[in-house]
Length: 414
Ligand SMILES: *Cc1c(COP(=O)(O)O)cnc(C)c1O
Image (cartoon, rainbow, N blue to C red; front, side):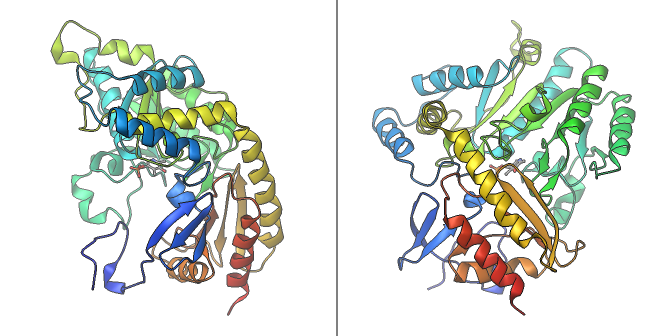
């Protein structure tokens, strides 16, 4: 019997097999038939400590029986209050206000609306957003608008709003990025939005912390709001809790999601400085922040996030991150000289390289072929075109050897 389900980023016309996963634990997924698959991409970049972490599971179960859901306009609850205080304590000053939503895309929509609201409420409306080439910020219309244009959004292109795009800071051509940002800032845009240090869906493209610091400084000099989309980079992926920390910067607006609940249930936050919050503060209801979703700050999701924060407080998470970073470095080095491996690179727990040639696009046949090859050998990978990347949960341990052995087998086949 065929399933009625329409899967994300899936061409059903190709009738590729879709395994049914029955359970997961740590870094492993198990099919209905009991086949073990190593989750080498953290289930699309969300799982940090591993699947079904006992503390997160217990927090979800306990909260579900106590208070499952409550309208968040005009009401509040303990899991959200606790989480808000703990998150603000964990994040750099002056990020002092927190708005809840339920996905990375909505956290970006919220960030964009906050920045437009900031300018509107100051009586000096601004509408232009500056973005970086190759960036990805989500799949809703606003998030697509500030992301790279390509085959994924071509049918919707006429409805996407115009943005100003600065070039990706390729090694040796960084000045062009800074010059373009400087020029755009003179036209009084509302904000710049960037993925700090590494562009994820755009192909795991890495740039230096110094560049991030320079971009932040240019925005500050021109009074342009700086939005950091740490939906992927947050929660240790790049070696530190936040990628921004490595550049010694603090954004005006910060988006977090994916690892916020350890990857167990959906939740997102958009953090803002007092300046942005205060611009919406008034006795005039017309100046409030006009955004909500039904499940804003869902108590069960907040409880999962509180358990995640407790794990960060009580367990040596950054030691595990450093361990993954070391293993990744050694394993990548062992395949980096392979004739088919181009541009092997690493940032924190993430490694990436291109196969064969650099010019492959997202629809490169390498991606489905390699994904199927690895799946059949018990490893979940999902290349971005001809870019293979490994982004494991921090509990992967020796399973990482198997991941690279399978990649090596693929490279050495045919
Ligand atoms: C995944 C991602 C998003 C979108 O998050 P969703 O939860 O999938 O909506 C936004 N920005 C970045 C940098 C991401 O990697």
